[in-house]
Image 1 (cartoon, rainbow, N blue to C red):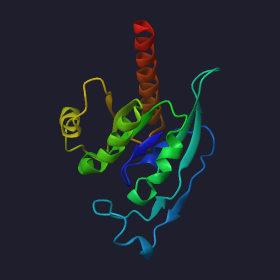
Image 2: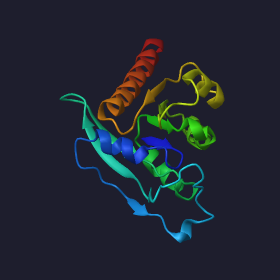
Image 3: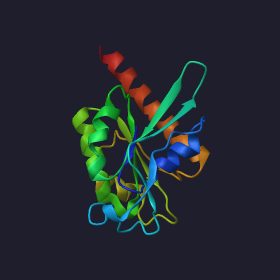
Image 4: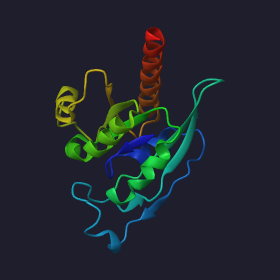
Length: 178
């Protein structure tokens, strides 16, 4: 799962890293969304995801990640529960210029008990350090926090590798205590 607020780069991340042509449900934003979708701070955005994005990346001959990019606007959050079913973990993509937009995603993942990492998508020069982002989001030290540029395939792959390594570490820790 790739989750986060509106216009943080979820579709861009799926597109940049998918080895297949991604399924995208991006549609042109219309006048009907005025007053419903919060677009401040995202000037120039003309499309939005209305269901989900889907992509795939093969990690090795036995391990394939299926990527689901969730829509960010509040009116589409009901889709998230369906996307959570069967998911092993998530990436919360954040824009440090609009950190408050990340709270819902983090809260939902914590409520579902789903492991996650946080990736700060850099839009130009970051205004906050990763430590400041961690403090602002009140992330526990166990939650990995990484930088990325969702437009860059290698940076997006590194985010997914971080998620897989985090999931593996959690699984190994559970096995050790069993």
